[in-house]
Length: 459
Ligand code: G6P
Image (tube, rainbow, N blue to C red; front, side):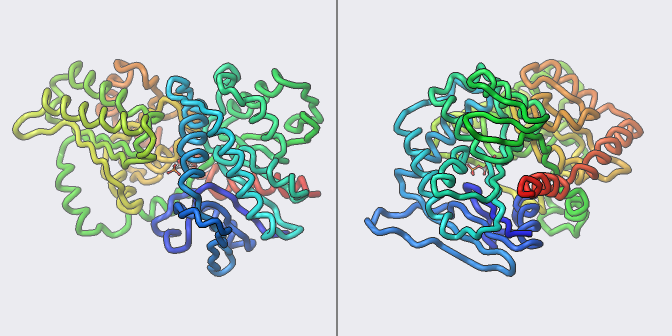
């Protein structure tokens, strides 16, 4: 078996890994560790333009080599902030109103993908298998193929793939589809995403079905499949039950006897946080007797702060929090806590275990791992309730959650009421059914199935 080469926009360098890293990074690191490998990507730094080619930053940690490069300010702006995060991200999350298209950004996106491919190419060995991650790198395989790279190239899209009518709003969508077919294996979070890709491409060109899941288009043969990403429920459960740090005692006290709602995500408009605040307000209006007995904590650390749409939503949340607390709060009760801060994952899992309801209502989401983490962190004998948007990929599997339309405030308000009044036996029952799914579809299974399929392409 050859070396595994993982390529992603951001890479988790060793000093950030394992303890503090998210589940996905840990899942990938385990695979790299087991079979030996290389992790290649951007080191998160911006460099000065010196006119000289900057050497790669490399680091060796046991079985894994890390190789990373920095970006110039111009590359960062065009490739990352603009095309990745102001064109693809909003469009793929159905927010065409937030797309700001510029041809210069598209060209920068292609150029940086080519630059990254050029840097990776000399590091490759002939029996490597290459696994590329996420929307920053849709053209990466095509860029590598320009160097006659023959190794199998797999791609996994962590975010949704939009319906063809939405995709078609992007001026370069045909080129994006064509470039994506340079991968040997295209993996998506759900069958709906995989089908959306297939129908978009079928509308554009002649697609030959070799057999189910294997297609030919634009002179390329590619495999297409869904691989719902999971978590490692056992390690989350351990983190959630681990010894309580002193800080935690204070948090436990602050949570008090009220019914506690928790939500935690990057501050992103796709997560539906302002809509959720309004749904919580509807709950306070509809069930006034519950005021004083409930507390909603929203954790949302700033993300992509240089992009205008992210600045706007941050201001919106600050205003809404003030308005809701000003309107409903009392001298002794604050209905909504909004924490624009990063929380350590180990602490977060403990907080999840102490809370009664997770309110996870993205307007669109590829999967949503927080929903799965919340479930895994619960005490199975007295678990909390998961309220989940039907537009999260996770809703395809977690049908025992209270599934809601995040745009429907009344429905979300009713779900909150249903959650706080749900009997313990129903909570236990729903939780157990969802845990069975989580135990089956783990992060390990996710990567093993993807890699098995990719290795089979070799044979
Ligand atoms: C999402 C994307 C990831 C990305 C992460 C953080 O989960 O799917 O590819 O790394 O957000 O976003 P950032 O822009 O900070 O890398």
